[in-house]
Image (cartoon, rainbow, N blue to C red; front, side):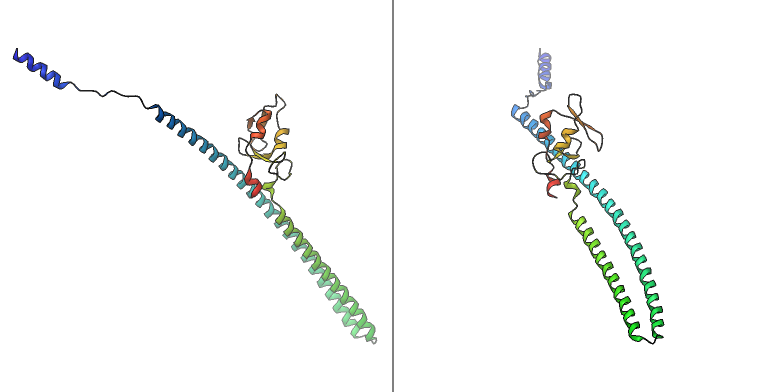
Amino acid sequence: MAPKRKSARIAAAAQVVVPKVTSVPKANGKTATAEIAKLKRQLARNREESAIQVHRAQWDAEFARDELQRNKMLQKKEIEKKDEELDTLKTEKQELTNEIKHFKDCKDKKKANGIVQAEFNRSEQSHKRMLEAQSLLKAGQEKKLKEAKPWRQCEICTEEFTETGERSPRVMSCGHTFCLTCLESMKETHFRTQIRCPTDRKYMYCNDEDLTKLPINYLALHM
């Protein structure tokens, strides 16, 4: 009987006690779900803000390229105009020089001086008008560049955005911004439940009341 009791003791010592697995407290599960939902919302906001910033950067780059091209064309025309005016002044100067040489040989010096003075006055007036025209052109260009803020305008109707109402800038799901009126007009005729973005041609599904719930692009209003 002794060997049998020894075997029983060995078997009892070899048994491993497995701890009972308890379920995760419900409070921790709810907290994790809330954190995940919070992170998803933050990620959605970050994506929306990034899309807005990318869109504005693209628009600014296009506007800068267009302005650079226009400025180059204006500068080229201005240089050509100045070259023509310079040639005209050189011609007038040569004519005056020839006339002065001719009048020096005239006996009637008083008459010659009068003609020379009249020609000089005419040349001075022409030069003055040229300077005034250049000044007006420069002032107009500076005013236009100062007032032009394309990111505050709807790309479709070119109307300036307002903080509320029909011209408020609304951000589509693809990240592009248009005024509320243009978004209404872009609804597809079939049940009026979708809008196709004119920039990237992506569809956005919506109902009539959903458009007023689209986020307002405050960057377009206050930049």
